Amino acid sequence: MVSLKSLCLTVLILFPVNQIIAVTRTPLPLPADFGMRTNNVPFTMEETDEDKAGPLEDPWQRNHPVRLGLSGYLEPEVLEIFKEYTQPHRIAWLSSVYQRSFLYRNHIFTTLARHQVPPELFFIPFIESEFIITARSTSNAMGMWQFVDNSMAPWMQKNAYKDERLSFYQATEAGIAKLIDNYRVLGDWLLAAAAYNGGLGTVTRAMSRTGLKDFWSLARANELPQETQRYVPKLLATALFVEHWGRLSGRPQWFPPVEWTQTMVPGGVPLETLAKEAGIDPELIFHANRNLLLGVTPPNERFYPVTLPTNSAPRLASYLLSSGKSHLHSVPHVVRPGETLWSIALAYGIPWELIQSFNNLPNTGVRENQVLNIPLDTTDE
View 1 (cartoon, rainbow, N blue to C red):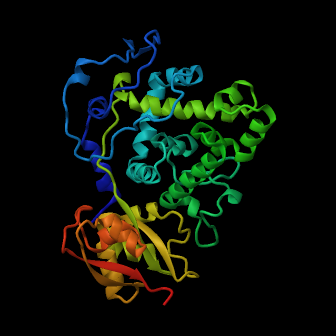
View 2: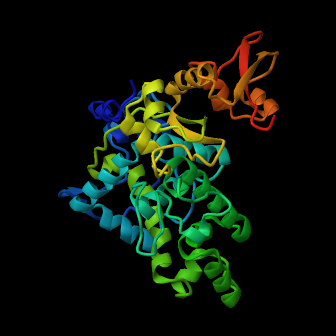
View 3: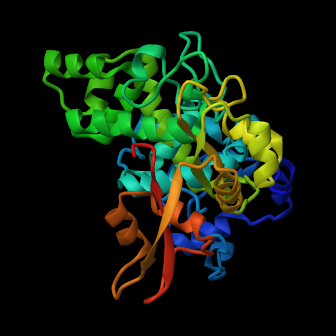
């Protein structure tokens, strides 16, 4: 049985972050005269003997710290917040928030990579909600990515049975989609992040009013709200801090990634029933589906996606098929030369994760002449 407790027990597995960073990239340099002390130890970004040791094998591949891709890390506003983060009480706070993200971390990074957007956007929910999926702001923004009622469309819905802002899975898709929309209008990721906080209209009006085209110029001209002026530097400082965690006396615990998927389930089915049939701790499935306000799939919908660990999906699919509650039937597909799981999924118009879980594949590799069962939706038949 997959349980929330068993996932949390992975804290017993510790990997020094600075050693893993040393495998993946050369640390981003800071000015040589950027002097400070952390825990009475002189701070430096110079490579240490510990950094030179290795390479070490990372058994989980995709759970590295963020690899920095945005610009602006050496701006004074960023370095000021970064320096605040080196205080012992701030290190403790950052560590607790980052550890809270472990259930969602792999899903968010994977989604960012799929959309080919900067990985630093992972830290948007860090700032927005501290990775608390039920967080509510004073303006009634809800969820890990903090959407208010009038900003949910077209990505999420809310009614008596569901509030999709509380689904980390759906809210992640929505949050990234909103950032991409902002980028398409503004043409700059820092401005896109500023618009996520202050509103797209606020940023576009400031640009039109002043003729300024970059975040730093707008912020220093005091043309953006105070909160937004600090929002982007805070995003960059948080990413920079996690990148250099080991050098700042932080020792966050390192977790194997949690793989998530969604399975379509008929309306009106209690989550408790699904937990029992899929062998999942009810606490975990309720946590992953906080968007289902009554603990059941919406009875007014024929089918609704339920979030669960990928390794539990085949068992749930078997239950739904055997009980006659599934809307899926399968057709065989023989893998042809050159085909991949992704190309097959694209051809059938379904997520590759669904094919993987439906066939209980241990990884994403397929071989020529392998027979796959392709699940197809019959809801419209």
